[in-house]
Amino acid sequence: MDKSKIPADQRQALGALLDDHRAVKKLFKDFEGAKDESRKRSIAAETCSQLTVHAEIEEEIFYPSLRDMSDEIDDMLDEAKVEHQVAKDLMAILESQPDAEVMEATYKVLSEYVGHHVEEEETEMFKAVIKAKINLRDVAGRMASRKDELVSATA
Ligand SMILES: [Fe+2]
Ligand SMILES: [Fe+2]
Image (cartoon, rainbow, N blue to C red; front, side):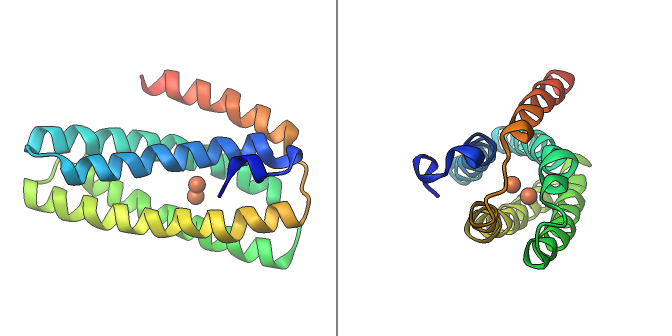
């Protein structure tokens, strides 16, 4: 999804989420290219912390702001919530410091799973939000300040 093509009412909010998606996808790639186990573990830890902040912002602010706009979007939100839970279960395995094989296998499943979730958000949910002309200007500001809080709390 091209940020410059997003209408102004949705650009800042969706743009921030797109940036998060790009950052996590880059970590998935970095993991694939990482040679040693300690590097892989540190990328996995960074992935979990970024995904946790991202999921929290979506669940606390972004998803609720889309509720009751349409049945189609409500169904997407229900599905997204379940997908977040599955991702959290996978991250809990990673955060339990499993042995190298389990860590690598779990990370691989997490990256494929989150890749799919992100794809659905961008190609279905974000598109539906733009089509429904939902004004997200205030939401964008709340998302940004919540992100600052969460990032400084985890730093
Ligand atoms: Fe999400
Ligand atoms: Fe997302």
